[in-house]
Length: 219
Length: 188
Ligand SMILES: Cc1cc2nc3c(=O)[nH]c(=O)nc-3n(C[C@H](O)[C@H](O)[C@H](O)COP(=O)(O)O)c2cc1C
Image 1 (tube, rainbow over the protein chains, first blue to last red):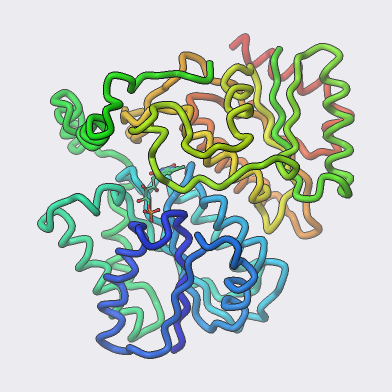
Image 2: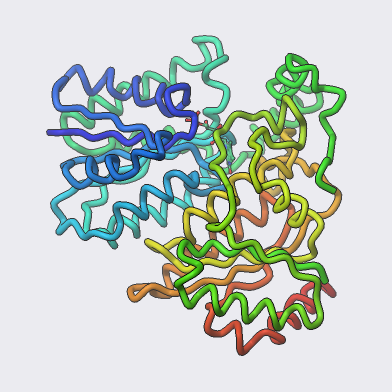
């Protein structure tokens, strides 16, 4: 199977999306290592090329970070470039939506849109993988990311074998849907001790901006 | 009332959608202060996800383009109207571009609302949101619902409320109905 991957992160090659795709391809590569193409939408001046790559592809996976409970603007521009055509049900289209917040409820609305979009374009809809809590992965220690990475590697291997997303892994990745009582309690505890905002505070301090963190310059 | 209208029409010089938005703005100006931004005619860049606005220069975007006047207008408005023809079942990339950039108006700190994480306010007050669309030939009720749901979510993120969704052809006729709805909404 020829696989075309479209990375829709504005962060280009420094993106969390790229890391997740690498893990996915580690598993995929165990079964099949040729015929993989990766395109980065952050190169927006190449939108025609990206659209052409889509037109020529058999199986396409589009990965993007959730931006305001939806796709980033550059991904919308890409969708506009490809959606003018109908693909006669010969193309297979799947999605990976990853986000900062841990709960999948933020991503299920754009998921519905993506399914409808595939239908509108006459593509076979493969499904949507949703994974929250991804923002910190580039600074997390290994023990925090290893489960996530293993899941993505297994997802990739299964995909190479079957052309589908493994339902069990998809289910695991999209949990929790909302913050449960238990993790709400954990979160409250953490926010009391300042831990949840640790990521923001340490970066604010690193840039000498901590004192100014409540600035409201456009009022 | 102070109103900001963000017109995401990708072809504002040729599309009738933009003529209708302009006519609507004329009406609104009779009794409101209105800023109309025709996004395709402005110098606006995509958010790069750099987080400068959250941890380098809090509250300020690192990109030097026309977005700053939009940020000022939006945060000082009572109502922000997102206007765009649907393209592939969703408002245009020009509109989504500015929606992404509005994250500059929030604060990075996280709080829990209804069992969901959201970002804290940076400003005391946020405007109500309205949505004006134009259907494509194949648009059905489900499409409108999908878009409405996503803008309802945007409103939650934005400490705000989506107070109406209208098609552009209804809007010119129903101008005052809309304003009444918004006013009634404010009373609640
Ligand atoms: C403008 C902007 C908007 C975002 N909106 C959301 C959001 O609505 N919900 C969420 O959970 N994360 C949101 N995020 C966080 C990203 O989805 C998250 O950081 C993601 O892991 C970034 O992936 P990338 O490095 O591949 O771009 C937003 C980030 C940016 C820059």
